[in-house]
Length: 418
Image (cartoon, rainbow, N blue to C red):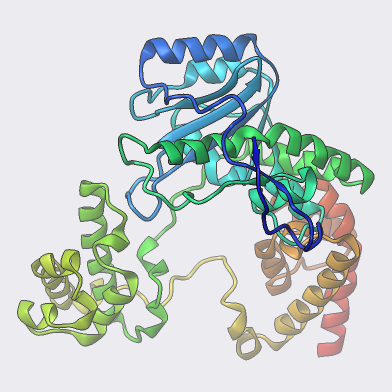
């Protein structure tokens, strides 16, 4: 560990100088990339003790897949190990070696899906970022939390790197190893805070829900989430968005490139709205001035022509009917009573959130609240609200803290609208 002056978190004080951890205390191991090397790590993990700090690095923004390109772990008796999951794509044996030991991750929901692809699923976990949110920490980045709770600043700087790069540069490996260097100590400090605040049981319920959660289901019509699609006004243009999005997605998948590296969402929408009459006209658009986008101008134009040739019966609907409420900015025009309920509920939850020093979105799911306000149970009472929240994934601590105020807010909103 080497120390130097650093800009501390606000709570530490402007004049303080924090030690900066620039290298892992045990050195930076080379990534394990052989069956023999993985077997050795598995053996050391099995004979280690205590919780296991884990992290994974992806290549978001560079690659199509969200797979892990590096896995980091640290445990007493093991030290730190770095594993190359491209060379070692099956980590089931490592998962078995960890067994019932607690996993410690920071922002677990980001890493659990790619770790599951490798055969790794926790039986118990502790999420240091989520713990910070439940405690009301204003900033929950890992480096900020180690400064605040441990008084140590982490050398950072490669989080947005292309981790599919091989070989990985040494300074990237330093960054990756540091991500798990202090997780056990951070977890211990957070347990003390959670216990003192009476929130440890809440956190444990959240962690159990994270560990038990199924992988997210594929979204229906994912092309409808194209950024800027609100600029599209008719079904023919929507068909153009769908066709272009699909052509881009197929090429991105085949090349294992992030779709935005081929054609950014804004450019996709600009092309649809411009409706170019030829490949040359499309290529001349400022939106496709980039090399990747311009090289594929013929592909984009073919996708547009395909959409233009569709009969009206095959055009996508402006909106897809479903059981989800409409966007909240449209509620006042569609259902003034529901809009009043939502406003009252949000106010009540905001007050409770401030009282507990918990972000509202962690106090209760915003989606559940929108659904409750849009179409509440026929009879609004505590039992009905508790049942509704449980059916929408709320944990018991959330239900206990919000049911009564939700009943009051829902009924008061209805009465005021009569």
